[in-house]
Amino acid sequence: MKDYFVYILTNFTNTTLYIGVTNNLERRVLEHKFKVQSGFTRKYKLYKLIHYETCAEIIDAIEREKQLKNWHRDWKWNLIKQTNPDLKDLWEDAEINSA
Image (tube, rainbow, N blue to C red; front, side):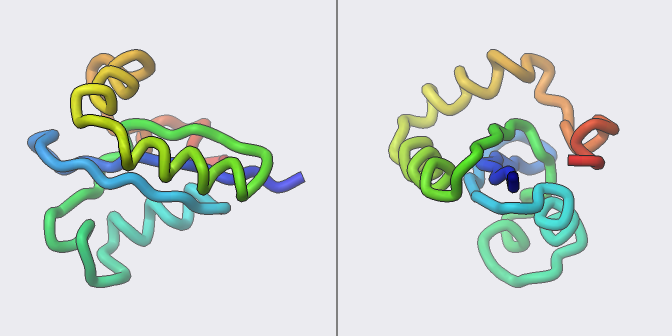
């Protein structure tokens, strides 16, 4: 069974958020960190993984991504701070690197 991920990135100063969905969290975060593609995350230097959720079905992951994108900024930050109050880069966590 394949897992899908909804993830949130921010920049060094925690001022901008990006919400995405992927079937390979390790690969996708590395693409952001190494600026593989041009676009929003590259322009605003969004490389810090501060939140992610796992879904069993792609349809659920896409639905959750849409839901989060429609949330107010404060709601997003409240969600992030529930699981990551120090806003550390979760990429540093060995468990994520083996996801």
